[in-house]
Image (cartoon, rainbow, N blue to C red):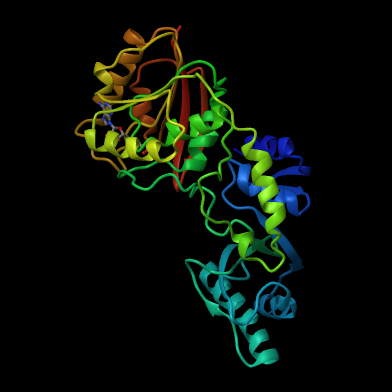
Length: 361
Ligand SMILES: C[S@@+](CC[C@H](N)C(=O)[O-])C[C@H]1O[C@@H](n2cnc3c(N)ncnc32)[C@H](O)[C@@H]1O
């Protein structure tokens, strides 16, 4: 996904974008920070680094973090949370890194003011991010707050929802041109349909999200934020592309209907209860992007025969289509029985998956 995110950032005007491992670094001003949060479909968090220092022993963490002028970022009446990622041998436990960081920040406040910020893990005023890698510690402020996959449109989910950021990335990886019809015949709560609709209409990924972390920062500029939102919202356009979702479960179609309905931009999204085996194309050939059940999270009586039937239906009924299937069950994927024209490794949370293309010509 890194290339997709880099392209998104480049298009937003980011400078010096560079692909890192599971991240993209870039330079920009405050307006870009707000815009990236509002518009990047494939970023989980936008972090603003404030200090990088070498770390060879545990005390280096506390001592360096304690020296940062945290008073410039929060007051002692505010709350904080710390997320830590540790890929060094200096610490063995990232939770301990988070705890030591929190101690270093609150001790500084206590020494200087006699009181200290509180800890709020769910809804803090400031979320601090610590990244330890190759004897280097990067301290960042998390400008997103909660993860950007929380778009704000999904109020109800099913048992195995696809992460919104992954869905948006898969659609972009597929190369869907936003003109041919898009189908998800195992649509569950409708994530792929909604992300495709938002992409086709240029609806910013953060359009339905109630709040971003930077809105609680001391340097928050509400006028600039409103200007950015207005500029981006003006780019929303109508589309006539048809997006079809179906699912075997009427409960899931109920949930998808509710989520799609929440987005308001819902004409041209068509939902129906149907087993994939009983579906037919609704018009000219299009693209299928779907996330069938994997046996890790959904119990299937016979995953192999189910994947075989997916292959049969694609072959017999969807000639002329391009079908992209994401699954973590690599063995079952083989039973689709069609030769994949492309295979991409992606992660759905901790699950390693393949995103596989079948060209049904
Ligand atoms: C992994 S979930 C899809 C999750 C979806 N991408 C989301 O974000 O919510 C797989 C879905 O396939 C549906 N399903 C299972 N067997 C099916 C079949 N034969 N035909 C159509 N849908 C089926 C399940 O009801 C479930 O909602």
